[in-house]
Image 1 (tube, rainbow, N blue to C red):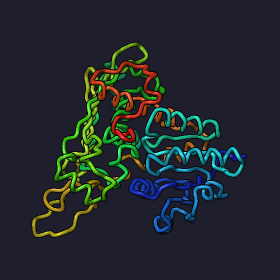
Image 2: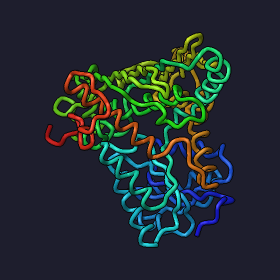
Image 3: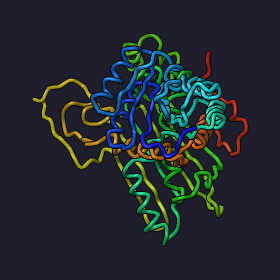
Length: 414
């Protein structure tokens, strides 16, 4: 029996890629936590990650040669699932089996966004966590972005309390494209940019519209309308760039996934009032780097945020030579000119507060703000948007036909 509260939460990482490195960096700002284990498919990645944990003084991290070995280790309390989308359900099935067989002492699990590729997969992820008796958290970092935390608190305390609740949230996230080949493969990733990035936008918008302390399901989804498009990466020159970068497994002339998506989500609050979410996402944006834009509008107020409107900017002339990197901002697209700089990406993007929240909730046995239930709700919205785009019409909720729906770009042989 696990004694709660735990003095220190011991985390095991599944996955060592781009997002895992963000999470690891953020843990520098989190107390009462150690990273004690890691598993990924490649030994060199496991070893490199364990060495990074040591350098950051976040604990003694053992690289494990198999997932079973990590899950049965006696020094792991919670698992962070950060592996590619197409692996997450199998990781969860293995964790469930190890716990039910009495071979694992893990009592909590957190999973990176999106929770799954389909509603059926997401529902199984939730069922497995509940059946294994796990405390579970959905890792949606934008809900924990520092501007979102501060902005929502001010709006609801000072404005909504006197003039009425907000009724419209807008969210946009854009960059020039993902890092790894599996993101570009619809069957492995679950879709294109709608699956990859709209999960952020609809959930942060839903969060901003939800009253503080109210459950997320206090807002009911009534209808969704979605549009998807291929704007950039199906052009022959850019499709060829992808083939050169990732090899024959990414062929956007034959098997493209959308690089632009638009969503309108109609909701209803507890008193039957209509609320709206407008969201756009794109892999076809070429600017200084990743751009997140948020708005929240109400009867007598507005909130606005742009992640590239930074306080710190640096100018580099043509004489400053350098190779392409991301040392100033994620998805950085240039090495010269007037450059916005995010001094603490892990903090501004929400990873630090997200992980601080999850660690404290797991350590104390408290239900997190974002759970697998929220992850499932997000996937239901995403699948509704894909279905709406496919049929060219608004889709009303509840929509039971989404239970086994697979987006067109994710269907094998489509």
